[in-house]
Image 1 (cartoon, rainbow, N blue to C red):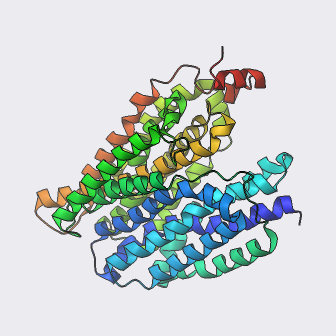
Image 2: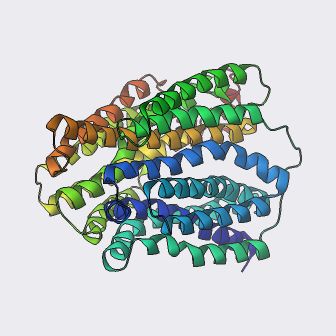
Image 3: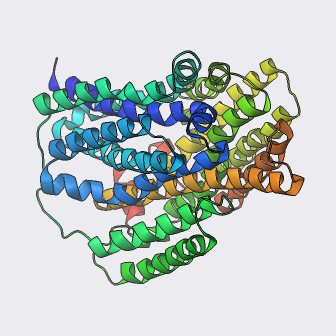
Length: 473
């Protein structure tokens, strides 16, 4: 097989493992909670810790690939991810599981960006689009197979096998990477912003993890307060640091671009709401409606089918209506489908739930894809790597906050009710809260210029695009 096809498929092996794992675990949370003796809501810490690891270590991935070689870093990422998977399978308590998921996230943080970098540096430009399409296939197939596969394994085998199946996949990927992928490096080695990474790590970790453990009793109240205050202080310190650093690990000056700012700020609000759904929905179906993990996975499977169905129409929709109209209107539509989870909790028939999730997946995927595209509408090619880091960190952080917000809403409902046992009706406020957060993003999208991203859909001349991105004309 030609290298132009072989390399993307090798990279895809690792990415399939990562993408499938992230969707499989959501379906299995109730069963894992019972087995390790904890509250299902407390397992939000396992999801949050994984997303936090991604947010903290993604900024370092490009520099490490340039410094040590893309093959070396990618191989190491597979080893770390598989090691984290094994640790998850052998976890006996919530603390063990949270640490193991963080270890998995450290490996995952290196896989996707370094895999993309491998393609850019080893595949010819004429084959790059096709190579990227091959590489991103697991991003669709993984979430598609994840819920029913995770539900089947948890129901008929054991949740431990969800993590054990990563071992043979990881070994195959590791061997293929060592044999067929070149150890490409960057031509120029810039000085890495270690101080910035430490400040970002403490800031992101303190704020998100502190918010996640708030009210759980997982840590003493003084420690929770210290996490939140320390995270806020470190975040403020990083903002000051970034202003006087030539090459900060996260370039906040890029937020001056209206399109990128809308993608990061508005996209974060939307992802907080939408990011809570994969966490809340399996809990509702399994705890509220007493379904098996397999039954739950078959139902949530509909969301991925809906997401696949819009791939052929996204370009036409954006070309006809423009980014501002699509992002603003679709934020409200997609948020309404998030709020539909409250109707599920009232006893909506299963066929109606499946149909609603099918349509919901269409609009949610339309919003995510549009946000990913508009982020780079006005970014100069020389700044693309820094923009990627900034966008990626914002995405992972907002999704972790979404999980924490959804769980906190359910916990608050239980405390007000005065009963520890969860029922379907306890999820109603949570769906409404996260839907309101997602809908608020429409305010930011409405402030976009009317022609924002127009050159991406109307195929304007290259010279005009260059002038616009540099601020000329």
